[in-house]
Amino acid sequence: MQTEQLQHVLTHVERYIDDGQHAHAIALLNQTLKQIPLFYQGWLKLSQCLYQTQYFTQARDILQHAEQFDPLTTEFHQIQQAMGRNDYSEAAQIAHEMLRKCPHHPRALFTLAHLALLDNDPERSACILAQHIQFVPANVTLRQLMLDSYIQADDYENALTSAEALAGLNECFETLWRWIGLLLKYSQTDTLVEVCARATKFAENEPLKQSQLALIQGQALRIMGQRDESTKALKASLVADPNNADAWWALADMKNYHFSADQLSALQRFVNDPSRPTKAKSIATFALAKATELSSGIEASFPLYVRANQLFPLQNNHLQQMENEFEQRKKAYTAASLTPQAKPFSSKPCPIFVVGMPRAGSTLIEQILASHPDIEGTIEQPTLPAVERAAQRMCQNKYQSDFFAALPNLNQQELTQLGQLYLNKSSVFRSKNSRYFIDKQPFNYRLIGLIHKILPNAVIVDVRRHPMDCGLSLYKQFFHAGVDFSYKLSDIAKAMNAYDALMKYWHTVLPNRIITIQYETLIASPEQEIRRLLDKVGVCYDERCLHFHQNPRKIHTASSEQVREPLYSKSVGLWQRVESELAELQQNMCPSLL
Image (cartoon, rainbow, N blue to C red):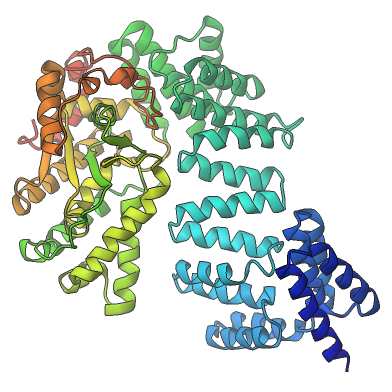
């Protein structure tokens, strides 16, 4: 009889919720739970109602309180035992039975979503949670798992939404910091500054956290072109923690920021302090080298650059892996396998991929193109590699083989779906309705074959720079991630050799598909080269592209300060001033490159 009564209560509660009468639903649930505290589904529903009326803390606490009344604790222990035996099939079977007995049971949902992640299927994990989260919206564990699933699925928009929801449900430094990390990664700078301010109240009396927040704010303000405010934030970061090496580097990486005598003394003490971690000393030495170059020239600063690179702790050198990958791509993307393509997209927007070696001038080309009214600049997007990972999962599921092996079997419909996936995923980085948008991720030169197959309309621009100048610039730059070959001159040369060989291959199998821009030619004849580039892209010449430095757009790369200045030639041939120091770079470079 009690079961029928409780089902009757749930039916009434659902009607109240559908009619937007949450207060009535909460009152009925409170009255019932006072009489029958073992009513587990009633606790879940009460938490849901409280969440929907924005009583987030109470909703979270009620859900935690409900765990003591969980009628399926025994079943969950059975799941844990099955997981301990790696019997995932049995664990899934028990979880499905739990959901049959108690719809939206949090522990059953967690089990199924977790199993999907173990099966390398983050999309399925996210889908399971998305179907049920509205019924248990205050469950912090499920929210965290949902966020993890979206991140692993490269679903940027939903990852950001989930991070915001998690921070709203359980606002603390940790949840806000995780949201901040995603906002920085995906360059959502306006929201980033605001969330950093929210996190500040959780960092009182914790100078290390204050320093990190100020550093992030400084980086965001730099992207937005607010140089003075950025500098102020970075200085505040160093006041909070004078040993924040990343903040020292961020100031030096302004390229034309002049350190005061006191700052230089503090930086010198940092570099010479034997108690500092090696990586931190490396980053600080990069900053000192940059400051020295600005005041005394490349000759005086080069020994410091050598020291900074020597100090950097290289855990894994991926050069051999890179070379092997490039050979695999050449074998997979034959002239025959490149022929089948996706259906051309008739509607805008059309992507422009700007590729090349880092420090070759890709940010300059991006800024020039983004100054055209028909072209929107975005960021160094993670999107195209994410699409290749999705293609890999699709091929494993459908063809039981990896993507390269399955490449000849992919039909036009499948390729078109992958192209649409790229456009869908990249939409979070676009804010305009332009004909074209730029994806300036230099390492997308690896994926030119994929671009050709899934985005037939796409424009590909390869930016070239004299290899010795490019190599020197790489050696002078501290990279937070992704460019682990830049800390040894011989590795830089080998990476450039591999890049050049792969690009030659793309030109062979895809003749006339890639637009090549030579940095030095652009510097010498800017209007002529810009006209040629715009003509190749398919837009009319616009004078604003010649005056790109006046464009107030956000710029997300290390070259943001340079491209806010008119074209200059002072970096052309810079390598010749330290040629004897670059013998290792020159000797390991293919003669054809030089």
